[in-house]
Image (cartoon, rainbow, N blue to C red; front, side, top):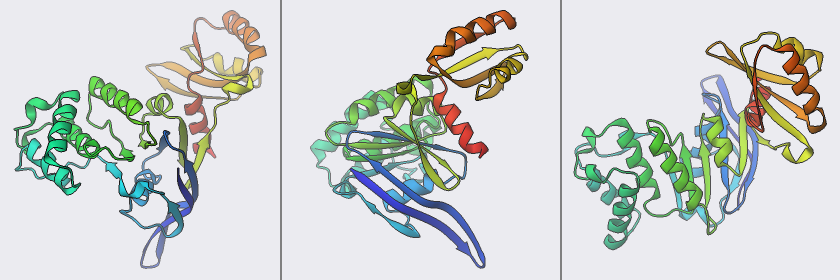
Length: 293
């Protein structure tokens, strides 16, 4: 298990102080994938850098147990590679820095480059790779020595849909035997589907998301282009959140199981058309409520 206890981080410049994180306390158990979401500038990357040791907290402490000696931070920073070396030469160089034997790193480079469909670019100079290929290189570099703790900072940046699925499937299978992953992303749906525990950064703190699925209270996502829907939901005193896409309203709301038949009947009578899905958008609902506080 790793534990963060009352972590605070602020930056000072002359007489100006900017608070980034305040009293952040988290426990992440073995074999967990911890999802971390938040707005731009909320402190997600700062928190990962503190956990990795690249930044020191202003106060508070971190207990990484035996994970500090086997830790990887994967970011979309392609400037940390040597651009005139080939992809393979880069991966071999960073493997040696992690004290891997030639037999081990050659085997892992072969396996991971084939898995992420980039083996044909191993002899290509890094400067000639696409943004997506550079991101794959960052991922392979971070996984090649099989770290026990993996910190992913926006890992699907520049990746296409197929490569994103390959990465998510890999992480799901990789997190076993006591390993831990922290997955930091703006993609709420992917975080909700991947993570066993989720934290939302808002107001300089991390709020742990707890699903209400086991309390006979479900989240529903309603899609319609009929504006009357808001008057209907208000008349039923339902708590909801919504966003608009292509003139359609996507509305997330919480509802006790015993009221669902009544709501279906009421919507069917009063709306020109709609679709509704169960257990979708619960994390988005929680996230948006925090942002509005």
